[in-house]
Image (cartoon, rainbow, N blue to C red; front, side, top):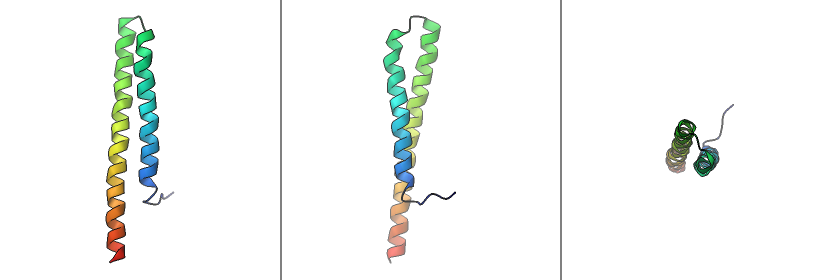
Length: 76
């Protein structure tokens, strides 16, 4: 399956938004955890989801920039 280059940034933003939602939910739910070991693990998972959100944003920016250059090259 091939995804058109113009849709790639949109899919990346959807992925980043989903990851950010999971990260925010994980950080908010930390207040409900009383066990320190469990809280430590939950914090690591929340930071992992945050990292994935950043990766999604970076992929969206890079793919958007590549799509812009490709359209410029085809326009000449």
